Image (tube, rainbow, N blue to C red):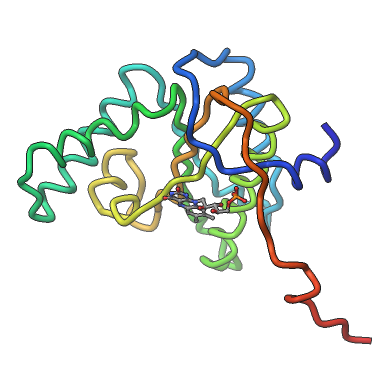
Length: 184
Ligand SMILES: Cc1cc2nc3c(=O)[nH]c(=O)nc-3n(C[C@H](O)[C@H](O)[C@H](O)COP(=O)(O)O)c2cc1C
């Protein structure tokens, strides 16, 4: 798929089939992530691939975080635990900032966000639907610990990926003209 078409037609879409995704396809998405630009070539992205039972471990962490924040309602906790089962594949993307003396924290995070966009576009061009999910628990210390990140590391998103159950809706944006100033 042409890159401009991929950019224009990619949508966040979470309604996906419970169908396993071939490893070779997953590897293409991961590799696309690694081709993002990064200042000083620090390559600060880290990927964690969750499939099958692996997703349940994430569900347990989400449940624990909810409990730590005072949630006691069993039905709500059950719902929280089941969240990662909404897609057959979740790629957790994290930043592990480098110790390069010139590297700026902001730019390390920016590079990983660029990696995420690469991955979403790659998934789309391979016929997959995806949605970048976060929420408060994403940035909880327990989440960092679960993925074995350093104190400076941070989970930046969960990419829920799968084959779409139906045709994806059209997107909506303001015109670029509304957000652009030409300085000549
Ligand atoms: C940092 C970030 C976090 C996001 N977290 C969520 C989320 O937790 N749940 C969700 O439904 N969508 C999430 N999204 C997706 C946005 O809702 C989506 O990109 C937006 O609605 C525009 O839709 P589009 O991606 O189809 O153009 C997130 C997007 C970004 C950039």
